[in-house]
Image 1: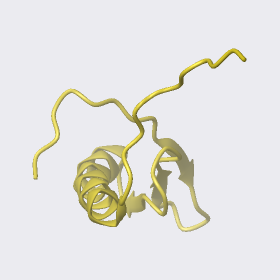
Image 2: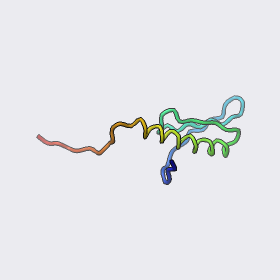
Image 3: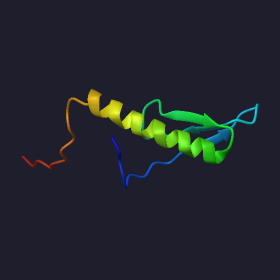
Length: 71
């Protein structure tokens, strides 16, 4: 599954060994690492696609919207 035109924020930290660790807070358990930031971004894009596929499989209900009701 290829998802285009969706934006995600990646929080990036560098651990004590010099590896870059990235996490996407909008997606559950979506994180990766790389020896460079470029490698991290390549890896995190693959992980984002996997996380989106998993969320799609798990999702049993679909958010439709919010409606104001006055009584």
